[in-house]
Image (cartoon, rainbow, N blue to C red; front, side):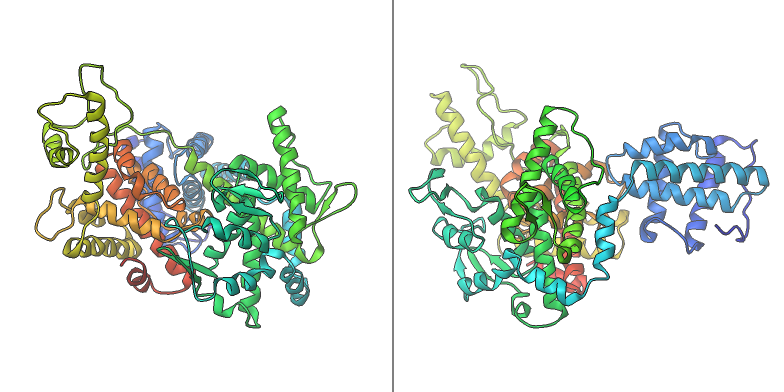
Length: 583
C-alpha cells in the first residue's frame, strides 16, 4: 500500500473529541475525493462516510482510535441496511488513516488495525466455496462449442422454441399474468411435468397433478419467471406475447448462446429459491457436493436441518430430469463437465437471491399512523354495543356515508352492527380504490411526478429530491395528483412490470438514500409485494403499517430504482426507460 501521498495533519490529542472527529471526517472526505483507490461506491462514498461517523458516534465508538475497530465492525454487521457498503467505507477509512499517519508509531497502529479488519471480515465472509470457484475457473478454459451444445440439451432451454411456437402471436392469460388453468397441461408437458389445472388440488385419473394455479407447480413457475426475466416472453394486461429477445433466440451467434446460458442458470436459481431462503441455502450446499463430493459443508445442527439437507439433496438430484445433472444407480449426483460453470454460477446467484429474500422476509412490523386512505378493517374489534373503527376520524366516516348509503346503511341510524361492519369494509375498499385510481389530468400528474423522481434519483439523490415528494398535496387541488393517487399509480405500475424475485437483487444495487431510514423497510416490503404483483391490493395495509408519508416515499423509491435497473438491463438511457415504463 502506497504511503507516498501528501500527508495531512491529524488532530492533536488535546483537541476536544467532537472537534477532532470533525477534522478527521473532513480529512477523510477530501481523501475520498482525491484517491483513485476507493473501495466503496465512488458515487456514494461521501454519504457513506457521513453515515459511518453518525452511527459510530451514536454508539459511542471513537474512530479516532485504532483499537475500536472490532466494535465498529460489530456495529456495522448489525446494521439493518447497507452494512456491506459501510464495511467498505470503514475499510477506506483505515486506508486513509494509514496513508496520512504523521509518525511511525501511528502508522504501525493503524496498519495493524487495517490488517485486523481484513482478517476479521475475510473470516466472517469466506466468499465463494472453493468447489464453486474451481468450477467457474475451469469453465473459462472450456471450448465454447462444447458448453453451447450441452446447454442446448437442457430441457428448459430446448423447449423455449416450442413454447414460443405455442404462444404464436399471443395467448390469453389471467388478470395476474399467469397461465389459465386450461393451458397448464400443455405448457407443463413441455418440461416433462404431468400437471393439469383444476378447481381442487389432487391427482386425476391419469396420475397427473391437479393444481389450482401454475404457481403450484414449482418447476413451471421457475421456468415462467426465467422467461420473463430473460425477456423471451412478456405479459401485458391479460395477453401473453413473445418478448423482445424472442426474435434472436433461434439466430446463431454469441448473443443467442448467452441467452441460452441465462435461461439454464436462472431456471436453476428460481427453482432452488422456490421453497424459501432456508431451503435455498441447503440446496446450495447440496449443489456444492454435486460439484465435489469431498467438499466440506456445514453439518446439520438438528433434526429439522438434517431433513432439510436430505430434501435439498433430492431437489438437486431431480435436476437430472432436465439434463442439468446426472445420477448413478447409487444415487450419487454429478454435474457434467460442460455444465459445471453454468451450474456453479447458478449456485452463487441462488445464494445471493436467498440472502436478498431472507432480508425481505426478516422485517418486523413498524407501527405508524396512517395519514392517507383508510385502513382495511380486520374483524370486529368493538363490543356488541359499540362500533369501534381504529384511527378513523368523524370526517372520514362522513366521506364514506354516500357509499354506505348505496349499501342501504344509514350512519346515523345503525340497527345491525354486524351488517354495518360488513358494509363498512366494502365501502372502505371502494373508497381506497377510487382514492388511488386517478384519471385524466390527475393520472398524468401522478405519472409525471414518478418520472421526475426517477430521473432525479438517477442523476444524484439528495435532499432536494424529497422536495418533490413533500410538494404532493394530500387533498385534491385542481389537476395535481394527490399523495394517494401517486401511491396508487406507482403501485399499479410496479404490479404491471412483472418483477421477478431474482431481479430484486439487481434493483437492490441501485443507489438509494442511506439517510432515509424510516423508508427502508417499506421499500423492501413494496418490492417484495411487486414480485407477487400485489402492491396495489396491499396499499391499505402498507399505510396502516408504515404511514402514508413513508408509503409514498417507498413507492417512489421502488419505482425509481426498478426503472433504473430496467435501463441498465436493457442497455438504454434512463430517460428512455422512464418513457417506456412510466406511462
